[in-house]
Amino acid sequence: MGTSVDAVAGGEGTIGNSPGSTVAGNDLARLRRQIAAMSGRPDRHAVEVADRSVDVLPVPDALASLLPGRGLARGSVVTVSGARSILLSMIASVSGAGGQVGIVGMPQLNLGAVVELGGDLTRIATVPDPGVDPVEVAGVLLDGMDLVVLGLRGISVPPSRTRVVMGRVRKQLSTLMTTGGTWPGAQLRMDAEVVTYRHLPGDAASADLTAARVGFGRIGGMSLRVSVADRGHRRETAEIDVVAGDHGSGSRVGLVPSRRRPDLAVAN
Image (cartoon, rainbow, N blue to C red; front, side, top):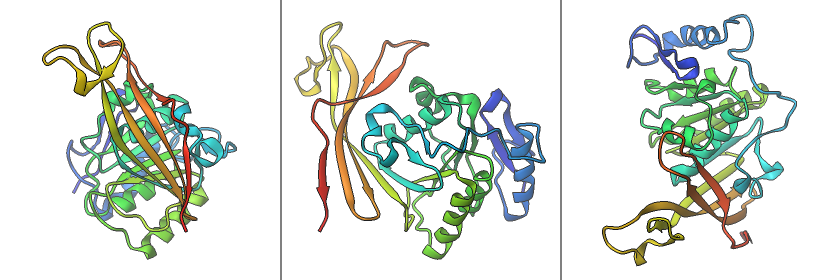
């Protein structure tokens, strides 16, 4: 079974024996070589990573106040659930700031949205079909990526396995972000839910979609309720607006804080 790494980086297309092939246990060494070849430095880190003396990876300003250190801590694991905009925005922030991002097991992830959020596709490599062991493939990417995003596809990873991988995360000073499954022991858990969509009736100011005239205008964004909880059950919540810019090839999307101030709740 051939190894396949879709290298968005540099527009190189698919690296591997054949497009759509999967990663098996015997192919992991080949995967390491292929990731290393992306930088042309097979005897060093897989890719040139951002300055690891910086303790956190950047996130959108609207999310920074919810996170310890105002970013994604290196050497930590973060789980993300709910509305996909938050996940996409953090991929965009890290890659847009020059960090390297690996994405495992998420073939339907909208990379076009990453670009609209300010991301840099030349800093992103994907393994859309990691085979039977996506956790192992993600572990390989930790060797050279600043951020590794792992789609778990509904599985629950045993604590004995997560402890091993988390040790590797700490050693490599990378950040592992998981979604779509259960990862015990994660340092942070983020959840985002859509509160409302906003309607743009032509050039007029935005309004609630429910009040829109049928057949007119377009959706101009949405409001999310984002919650962040640490292992001590300390939780912070804020409402964040996803604002769409002009349509077209140069369109951009941004995250901005809602006027409502974040709430702080401590679980008993």
